[in-house]
Length: 359
Image (cartoon, rainbow, N blue to C red; front, side, top):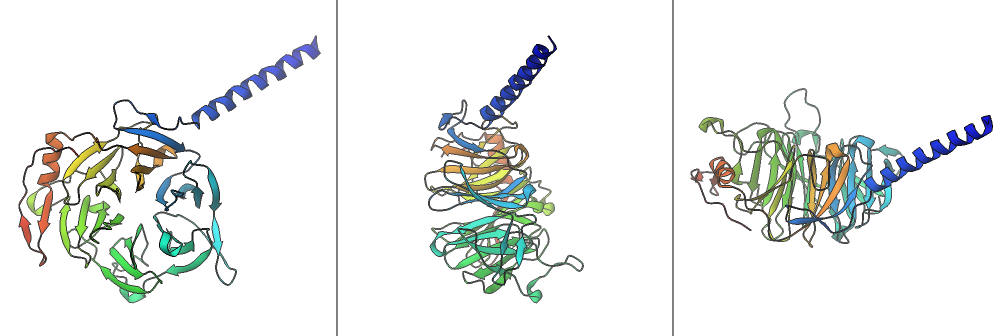
């Protein structure tokens, strides 16, 4: 009798364990290409088991590089979300171990087989994860306030032979061999200043640069020589509050649209002139819902890759050309907070109201 009772207890434990395992497996299985009701996209796949993912980049084969920041590592996945390798550290040319502590922004340079990783410095690796060199601005180039210490890189963008790195006080520029070229901006809230800019991307057609200036609640467009084209955000002199909740990252799609993560729960879509085209997303932890979206990337096939930070995952959405049209009140808010400038830095347009337009 006692022996049978023991067998029943063991059987019960096994049933519970199998049930729990099945629950985990079902949670980590996404029906590829699953249309999401009420949206204009399909959910292609989801990568789980991440801790505070902040940065993401894709290469020409749609391999996915993720800053698994909470786990102090970089992870590489194939286009289907299957892990290929992970890096918690690399070794320099002298064999010294270089750990990752809080990796953030990522960029891939396919032409030169390079992966850029923003941590406490910018580590440059080859795409297989082998260390090449660090990007470090000279001390005299760092214009932080006294006591702020060295530049801390946030995100990075590569365009032709230029590498742009955002930091608390602006944008540091290097060539594709690691040579320091220059610095744009100082820390502050005026036009041409920045306050902890994070996301950055470059329009491959024009070389114009788009920067998410997080602590100024702004999206800013710059010319290739660093002059402000337009900006949307806070304007204390006009008593205008930013329509952004808290912008974090920006990526450009193949059709020239800009995708901006705006925490806690939405992706904003703009054209290259700063006109709001769409708003995507809702708060939650279910498929296609968001909880603090961070890094973004968009593939030539119009797939949106995004770090869903507080849900500990990366989601991959297949977008369509039929993005939802924003309401007139939202369009008006962004138009009111936008300023445009000529080549000399003079404001050339006043705030205007335009009707909502679809893509």
